[in-house]
Image (tube, rainbow, N blue to C red; front, side, top):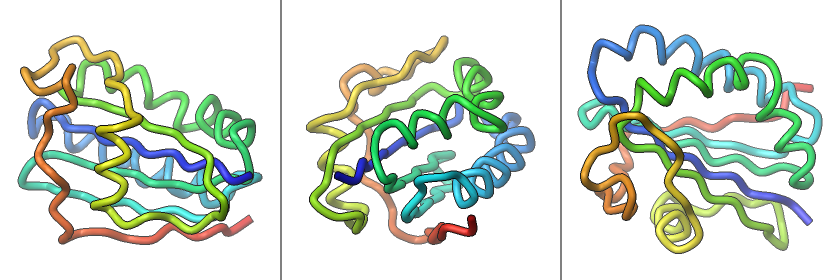
Length: 144
């Protein structure tokens, strides 16, 4: 059964953007080439310094293998200092089709959990973020 992974990250400051963007692009390329990657989408809200990822994997094991390897693994510790809001949600789906961003946000609020950050915003722990602005999204496709 496919596994869906959703992340939402909000940077604390514009000063982290030059480090964040290249790691994000390299992580996206890593996902597209990862075994078990089925489909994906990214959404950037630059005015809010907020970035979303939504990916479908053949199963939880392939998603975890990606998450704990390569560029993605190297980037994760930096988010402790770079982000004041971070959250993740995962669920199994009947098919690999990704939900829309409004549905993804609903699932994040229902199934998600905040990730550890060193300087959380007041909205962080309760997942009380603004709904996603649907202006700057892109698809990720398997390239393996």
